[in-house]
Length: 189
Image (tube, rainbow, N blue to C red):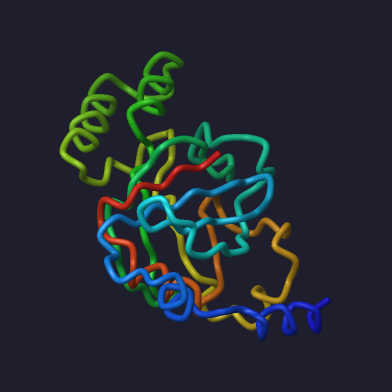
């Protein structure tokens, strides 16, 4: 299985080469669409599909994140609200989970307080990262495999090892990080 992963890794075309091949020079409008059931992350520039990446997710991809402890990857419309370089995972792109829909659900079900709801709504209205320490959870991100890249990038991508985030291999997060800006749309279904 690991040998198969290595062979697949060698066959990949770089994002730079794909952009050149498709004659895309303007990178002003990137968008990410994630299909949890197919374990794919699709990178679009405007309406052109540029590259598809294999991903690893949180627990069972059929479910959407409901609380901080469930390890599910959320479903919905998000945006990159922050980008950082960390010691453990390297480059990461943080999503605005919980979004407005999650906040409404959380308030209606009593998972969050009215004060937490208002903070989430205000952050989303200002295109900022919402509070990530509520019972809805947070800190959902797109990231690489970190120091375990050699092992994890060669496992089948149906091995769900994250806490609800979306993982690609380290070279792929470098590509995505270079193209996606704060505010980049991310749709997860």
